[in-house]
Image 1 (cartoon, rainbow, N blue to C red):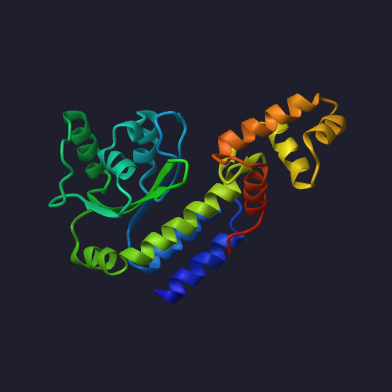
Image 2: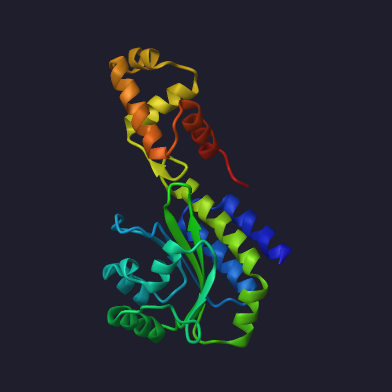
Length: 241
């Protein structure tokens, strides 16, 4: 397991796009004889185009996203309210399944997705992503693997999640949060020790306008001070690996 984990970290450090991240996760899952995986982020009703990195059948993933199933998926609903990994599938019932949700499960089963271990990935602002390792049946080998390595899989999922957020969120993102070009620019100058008045002079805007953009950036990042915001900016620029 140590070798699998170290190899994943090495691959994540070199990943620059979704294909790279897919291949890194596929390699780790394959080494553990886990047949299927899916990373979905963010799983929020406010997001119309969630990021899905998966080796599920393309017919299923296209159908899932087109129907916006992330909004009703009982596995995702459970991930939103659970901080711990959980198993689902036959014998691991999720309470209160609606007719439409059962239909989703039935459709997924047609594409070989019948059971799995899902790991909720919650950030400090309440955003939720989910990593699922799945199989087409309750295979004893699969069940032993996810039970034996649950903690390691959770750490791997978190490393994957953090790396994806930092590398695929775009150049104007800080800690996975998108900022406007002006908010990002003001934060960059703040990191260089410039005051709101100095930033205004540099950018040709009023001092209160610069302060306004900095306040917006802090609110989006969920912090109270400029120092905290600058710390997140510096952290986002560096690699986690």
